[in-house]
Length: 157
Image (cartoon, rainbow, N blue to C red; front, side, top):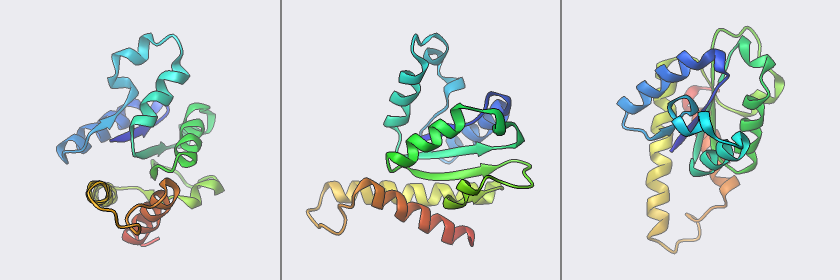
């Protein structure tokens, strides 16, 4: 499952991305589509619970993101947990240096490449469940690094 991280002011773009990913037969979590997110007594626990259910994260960055506390929090939590991460940049002239670690997407073609890598990871995870081959059973951080490296390569970065 893919977690879409975004700032509230980029909600419309996040919803469009969710619609696009559903057309690609991808399961996802987006807080604005989750009625429980609006009524959660502890929003941090709610967000972390849903982030933990996901294997991959797309972080939407725009000029609006600069004032967000949640987007960097979610990115950091995802990175710490070894999630496959990609960033989707909206109308940015420059990005924070820490984003250089992650693949940067700007178009739906780039998003398609993320989806292809995500689906490849899903296949690998399923095959690892049925094999005792140690080379397949990588640590979570190694899986995340593999995803990031492969996506950057697909994107020519």
